[in-house]
Image (tube, rainbow, N blue to C red; front, side, top):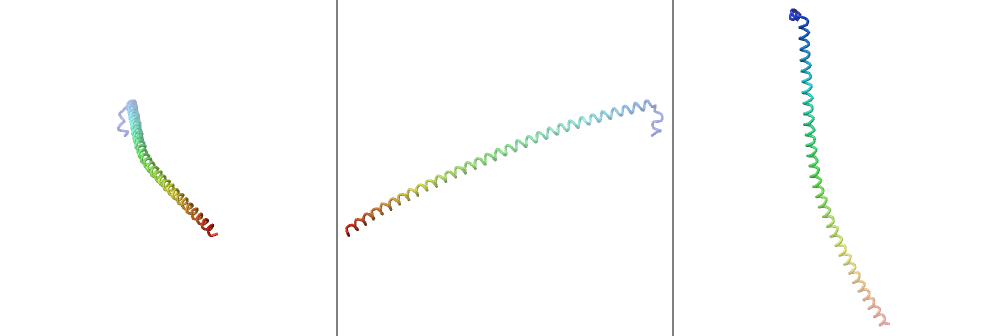
Length: 123
């Protein structure tokens, strides 16, 4: 290598070194600038994808919520209907039981009065 630069002056070598250093610095600065741009682009793409996924997830949650709300409303209405039917059946049975008790009491009172009447005739 010494023979390669033997005929070149020191100033010329210095200027060449300076030029190469400046070019290397420019290249490094350009590469850094491009990396920054790439990172910014990647960050924007990631942010966009994240936002799209968030929106998709929120839509999915909304659909699930609507489905659960619909199921809840249906089950609530079915339960209320069953409760009303059971209340009606209970009221009918209570009314039938009361009517039977009244009928039995009337029969008892009638039989008791007949017994008292017959007992008083015998005596």
